[in-house]
Image (cartoon, rainbow, N blue to C red):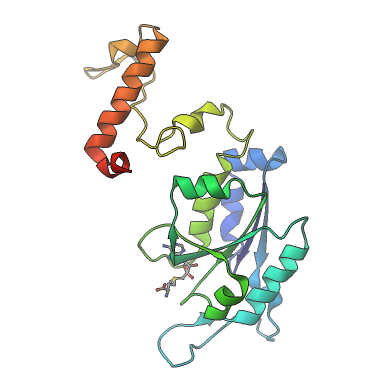
Length: 228
Ligand SMILES: C[S@@+](CC[C@H](N)C(=O)[O-])C[C@H]1O[C@@H](n2cnc3c(N)ncnc32)[C@H](O)[C@@H]1O
C-alpha cells in the first residue's frame, strides 16, 4: 500500500515513520510512504503557498495553484492516481468502517491543511474524499494523516504479526463491539486476580466468556454501537 503525504511540515513525519510497526512494514515493502513539501510547488521567491482570504478575516488560506499542481504531479509519479484524501474537520468522520474502506485502496494521497485551510477551489477541482478525525480543531492535518495511516496499515496483509489480532479489535468488521478485557502474567496482583475461565484451557468456554464480556462492556459504555 502506498501513501503520498502533502504537507507544509514534512519533518513532523520523520520520527513517526521510524517507529516499530510502520518502520518494519516499510522495510518489508508492505507499505510505502512518500512525504512532499508543498512549498516545492510555490512560484513565489519566498516559497509562500498561502495568502490572505478574499473578503477579509483572520488567518491565511492555502492557495489553489500549488496544491492542485502538486497533487497532479504526485499522481503522475506512480502507477495509479490513487484516492485523494483531504484531512479537514468538515469532512465525514473517520471510524473503523471508513478505515476498512480506505484499506482497500492501493494508493492514498493525503492533503494536510494548515492555517484557515484550503482555498475552496482545491476541493472543487480535486474532489477529494474529505475526512475528519473528530469534532475538534487541530493546528494542522499532519497528526490526522498519521492517525489515518496508523489505523489503515493495521489492515494491510502481513503488517501485523498475527492477522487475527485486528479481527478481535474493538469496532472491527467481525466485531463492531468493544473488545473483551485482556490479561497477562502475573495471575494475581494486589488481590486482583485473572478470571478462572481464562486459565482453564477450554477454548469454547473462553470464546463464550469473551463474547459475553465484549457485549456487556459495549452495552455499558457504547450502547450506540448495539443500536447500529
Ligand atoms: C486550524 S485548521 C482549519 C480549520 C478551519 N478554519 C475550519 O474551521 O474548518 C487547519 C488544518 O488542520 C487540519 N485539521 C484540523 N482539525 C482537523 C480534524 N478534526 N480532522 C482532520 N483534519 C483537521 C485540516 O487539514 C485543516 O485544514
